[in-house]
Amino acid sequence: MEKALTMGVDKLSNQELLALILRTGRNGESALSLAASLLGCLEGGIRGLPGITPQELMRVKGVGRAKACAVAAAAELGKRQGLKTADSRCRICGAEDAAGLFMEELRYEKKEHFRCLLLDTRGQVISMENISTGELTSAPVHPREVFAPAVRKSAAAVILVHNHPSGDPAPSREDIRTTERLQEAGRLMGIRVLDHIIIGDGSYCSLADLGELRDPD
Image 1 (tube, rainbow, N blue to C red):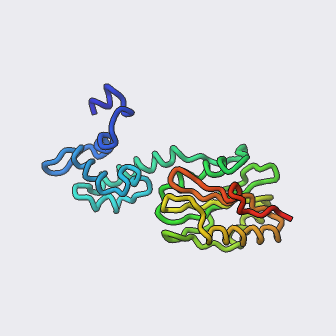
Image 2 (cartoon, rainbow, N blue to C red):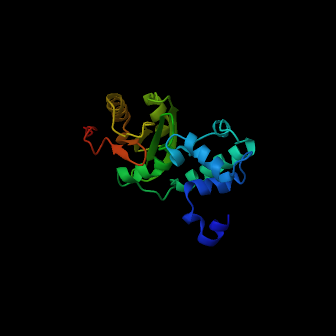
Image 3 (cartoon, rainbow, N blue to C red):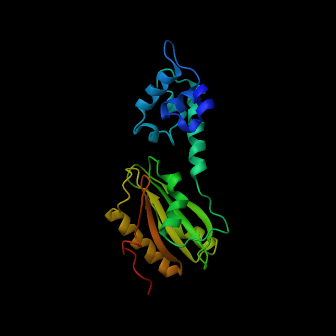
């Protein structure tokens, strides 16, 4: 704590920051020692913290309910701070803008989540829709789940977004087939599918940039 007060929390190591949240250790060990044990149990170290549940944290010896909730809450605060929110003033000019809205929300998820960004005729965001949540490698999606909210909210275009829990945003064959199917459904309904963004761990892939989206007739 003294180091945080005199030098600033930005000078603390991950272990020291976690020890401050834990406050106390376990029998015969300091908070620093417990923090080291906790970090060692996380896949990827500190990068494995966002999205972890209190129940998972409590599997570490010495981490009880209060400590687990405190750590999970701190991780969630950090995650929310990194989120960008879409409002009526938000205009999407390219893949980077769309990916930025979802990166911090989806990059750490352990399951695939399929989202949809609804846009008006000027490219401004109408809403961000949660379409489906799947397993480790797939999030099943049906055209009606994508286009029902688009029709209801009079969207002119949509951008599809989903994450790869592996951290690698490279599209699979199924990703490309899904995009083609949804683009065709959108064409029939007069709603353009502008892009399909795949979120990885700190990186993204745009199927439009890769030339995988056919131009509308």
